[in-house]
Amino acid sequence: MPVINDSKIDPNKILPMKYPWARQHYKSGVANNWTPEEVGMQKDVEQWKSDKHLSQTERRLIMWNLGFFSTAESLTANNIVLAIYNHVTNPECRQYLLRQAYEEAIHTDTFIYCCDTLGLDPEEIYTMYNKVPSIKKKDDYVVNMTLSVFDPTFKTIGIENIQKFVMDLVGFYVIMEGIFFYAGFAMILALKRQNKMIGIGEQFEYIMRDESLHLAFGCDLINTIKAENQDIWTQRFQDEIVELIRKGVELEKEYAYDACPQGLLGINADQFSSYVEYIADRRLERIGLVKMFGTENPFPWMAQSVDLSKEKNFFETRVTEYQTSGNLKWD
Ligand code: FE
Ligand code: MN
View 1 (cartoon, rainbow, N blue to C red):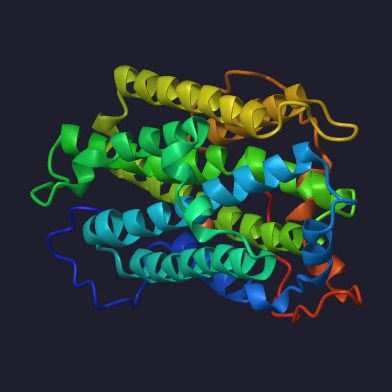
View 2 (cartoon, protein in one colour):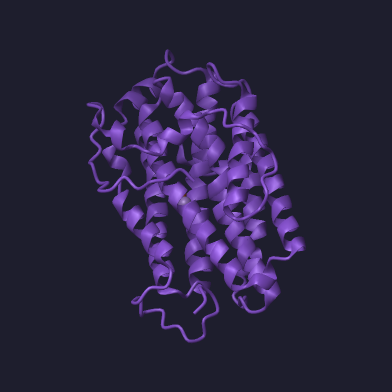
């Protein structure tokens, strides 16, 4: 019973399960439940509306990241619902995909909440993905990688089509959620470390925790399809994926320099770029490819940001302790 192209599968018969990793990711997702309204925005509003707290550099990187993420979350959600769900017929994987789709709705909601509370112009934020070249290039890049799967006649039959489907997974899980989100995460969390826009910072921490699960599910799915269809994993296909990731890293660095050309207090712009390389190496290794940069993590504090349970008791925030088990890993 393979994870795709199982002609005998009943997608409604979830027991007994074949892929415990899918079930585990579902349970971890549920244990991480949160909603944006639980995070107070009073301090952020105060800082955003006054001219004493934030530099032009800081305002720019906040706008760039709100502009990128506000639309990237729905691009990702559309891909799950309109492309992936259709082809992954295994019931426990589908259960996870439904959970992930819900989390993407929560993320979309986070940016609605940020726009509302900060009083931003939605027309400005929600058109940045068309108007800001460094954002548009990233979105266009993944959308183009995944066009063939959106074709209503597409089927995952035969080596070439399975490779196209794996390309879609690489595009969205590895490149979009695994690389294109991470310069932004690092910037916003660097600001939070300086006590600036801590509400947005906390929301980004929750989003990052969710995304690390999305990425883990996507990589497990890719690795399972690989194991079940070994003839797709040719040297040529591997080289193609490596090239796509290399180009993705370039686009993410371009975005990082554009969003934050001067760097932030204590962090220069090159460090965001090194962080992108470090992250990309981890993604390559996660899907069984050789790392290409060998760059050290310039922000070891990013790894700790995923584990939020210790941070929840600050009196400024009212986040409910949803998580019942501390089983998160940084990957
Ligand atoms: Fe998301
Ligand atoms: Mn996601």
